[in-house]
Image (tube, rainbow, N blue to C red; front, side, top):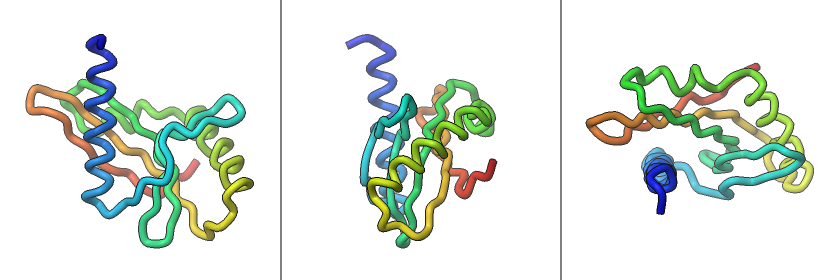
Length: 117
């Protein structure tokens, strides 16, 4: 296993554990459609969350969310519409960014919910 693969698995594991502690239920990981990917699809409180995971190794906790550009969010919205065409049972949909920061103290996660374009 390469170092990048190891770090990626660690980040993914930490992110999913973090979401579970916040009351989210995992529905799907890495859902791909039409050239776009949704990192995590989860539910919480009868709401569907399309979650973009953004990671950095900077000590600034705001940096990962700043790295998610408008084009990436537009791709997330496009993919989410395709998902909802196939799974139309959700009335409330929320776009969320899960920021994962790696530093010498370990892995830290934070959520920014209800992202708007």
